[in-house]
Image: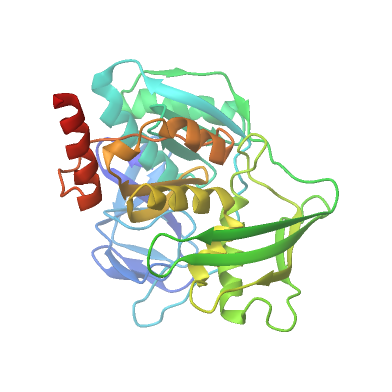
Length: 353
């Protein structure tokens, strides 16, 4: 918890041995050493400094920097990791924003600290729509979070209407075939997969299985299919909610000796991302990197000539069924390919004539 006078306080229970003020302990989950600044025995609205805590004692530690709820602290010479607590996934979410722009940074700091002490509380930031979303176990849980922001961090916030964290699934068996084929000079990308999706009982989660026979898809490429499917399951096609209770079975496929790779098969399973990257390559684009954002979103960072980006928004929406967007900013001026130079010169000559 955050204390206005002491700073961060971490409540612990001593399971064995003793804990001395000023000593060093090992965070066994992260492999980092932490120094115990002060040992505090808490009494309702007061606290008392103590020098040592013995087996069975519950005390608060001041000064820990890298330890969060559920982690194990132990003797650096005798590392041990106790079983972690299981925390339920949030079921309710609301949009939140500070009432004044001056409180934006304070709210971010407050949310980070609250999330560190309460693993059942999550928050995320959607930069595209400039919105912060908090998630918890119910309306009361989130009301307490908002109240603590006000009391402990002096942040007044506006809160949107609660929204349910739905899940998406399937009701019948279906089989999908997809060929990922991109060629833009040099080695290309090729992957061919056929995947059968089967509904599972409620609460089963997600399963992946391979039924490939005869090396139709080489063994080293199968983890790429599995990873691509796992990433796709975090963002369903109906409304963007996580997909659950589904078994994905890789039943068939094919590969190319030169153009196939783990990445190609990963992109084949993440159909839209592969299409976007291939389209950018066709526009003389240079892919810098691609990664993940909260909520299962995929982000592609690329350098593309501005002349190739006209009407791109329509193409992008068509490829991704309206689920993607993009932003642009000037990166640099670069040398125009010779054939483009020739086209520009010819246009200018036509205008001059």
